[in-house]
Image 1 (cartoon, rainbow, N blue to C red):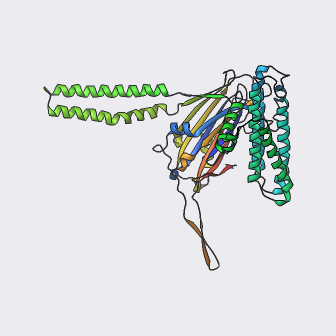
Image 2: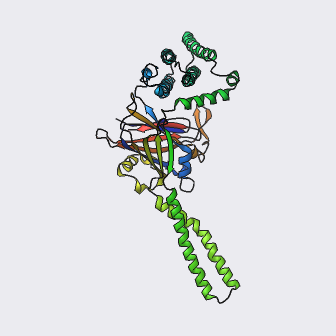
Image 3: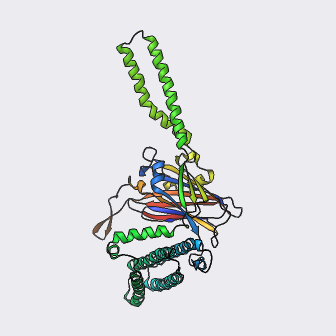
Length: 454
């Protein structure tokens, strides 16, 4: 069974989602075969800049029971558990509601027929009502805990309303289902009235779309406390790079001093020729110092891990997991045999000249067990390919066709295809190696399709 799932994210992004178990060690490798006509090569591509700007890693507690996100509901009652645990339990409960709702909304929007869409949408409304009712049943009596409840209640009410308004805006339109549509709108109006009744947001904030949206983003981060792990990134090659720069500079300076001393011994006095020779020597040093340093650095750091992400629980600051990352351009001879075999299975017309890019993530979960109700954590890695799109052409002219005596032209866009091989292994004996190839089709504005090749 596949442990890593690759799927589209936003316009020019895709994501990889992996579930990690306690004390589990795993390795995820991605091999990109990028056509040379996309303009990606060692002269235009910087691995460090791309990693910092376009690769994001997110790690949080996770439950497979997305449609039963009440696994923590009994803990948010003040009559159960310790009061000090209230905030964490409330956040876990709220986070699961948001994840479940977003997943269901995304699935429902794929239903293009009104007779399929509206019954499912109405069922989602009923589920949302039950979840919000259960949340509001356990309002804490202590004044110190009320702000935590109000933040979660305010955010989930607003997020639920926005999710269903999005559902109506993007879903199929049909006059036959006006009653179902009204039912969803009534729920949204009730949630708006509920927030107004409790004075959760000021009128000034409500009148400004930017302010209300940014406030809800803040509340979202607050309910992720104790659920989403804090990430600290370490540059593993920082000191090594300093050492290489120092050694190269020392060697070049020793060579230059040798030349200077030899030149000085050959001239009994300071002359124009001596000054000119010294100028040439120092000019050559400045010309080649950076190039030699970069060449030596590329040779030494190639194949070495570049970064380490440390994920800590935001409550007790304990290390939950570590992720070590490799990311670099490689040559075809460096491809593993099984990965190269998948690339070779492409049709002959698809075997074009390409640049190879390798991403590797080694994960190690440190904890023996997680908090009650959660048996795994979820790691999400997002790749944004917008930097690839800057070199792409906008279009490819027109495609002409004829029907009878009439000739017409239709504008077409130019698309590019990236081949991607995913390889995933773990230290578990009952887990098989995952090896899959995907075709990522993109243009300048979006990823058009991600197709898994069987």
